[in-house]
Image (tube, rainbow, N blue to C red; front, top):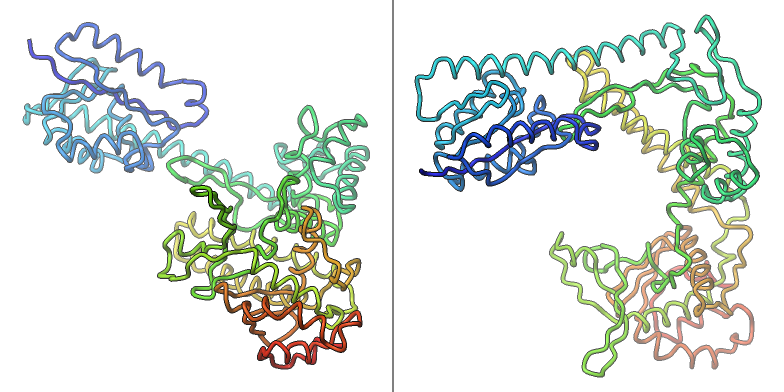
Length: 544
């Protein structure tokens, strides 16, 4: 007796079903029971798509289980006479009769039979005039598509109804925040004093400079009841601090298909003044900016800040960022750390910049930069509050752009698409305007607590290197270098200064000792650079 290969395919569309095994296990059991009485088949492989929708057709993508199997079918890797076992034809596709039948025909043309477990039948690829089989496939595909379409419409209408009710002033029970209570007539919210006090404390602690993990630990230690969940953690603290309901906004969710899965995302336009505003807009925006700064300057305690110029040192050849590479020991010879072009490493551009040694670069630049008079680059005004507000506005603009983009993807008529596209373009222009203002403000700003004297700078300890990096990043927009020539662009200076690093390294110590002005705290930079024969323009702006 000839034994043919059998392949089982199972699929569930919900991630929750996949996580607990619902549906998948049932389909596998049906397959095993079927094959017990079919000795002419041997199960070769069990293919599954967990949490992938057949209604969107994402289970047919190359990365999906069925899509990968069909790719093997089309390449002739699955032997003719094989059997594909499914619970029902709707497991293969819920795209409808035409698209689903095309998929089945591909299987039949490759000589692969299809087993429908629910009906206990095998539809043979060789029987081209099997009317009953063709009808079963067509009816199954139609019913599967109809069921998915009805589910999708019901979910969509439910969310549309909730949004319409919210717009008309009716409050939605599931949208109640922990510091609020829904009134009996469902037309207003009542503020709960104790949870509100806890919420405001969160904002006070974050603006005081504490991180979300530290805040969570503090609240757990002093026994403050959590606003949600059983205990405080970094995630819950972050969610409350970032939730725009505190400034009165309600962001209803809509269901979209993404990567073959249904996901709830914010609707394009929030409903303003839906909740009572319990945190001022200035405090909210300032708090959001603390997250931006934390992400930008986040450094693990065990990092030694090997590259002092990380974030603003660029490749002279292509403008890409330069990365730091640990020195190695080869054959008993130790090689110093190097800098390399990240763009060349990933092959994105035709960059010809070779790696070069880092220590010499750092020595030259630190010696040079530590003798600049940074008070000449400083602005005496404190712009920190204005910067925080603009950073918050930038974050808000990014969120609106994301929501409008989602809305365009969900829109079903040209009028809505046109309207949302116009709003998206307007918001993008607004974001660009905010970004320009922020850039201009940052270029003027200076940390008033910083000393502008780097003569005795610490470049040894991790803490010292971190402070130096932070200090330099306030003044330097970028350093462009190939290891021999370096160009420095300061935020507050229009000129880009060029240095020959080899000349600088050779003559720097001698020059510092011989210049008549070297005895002063600030050396005479014009004479200093004349002695080094370095061509600089408008350098008088940086001298005492």
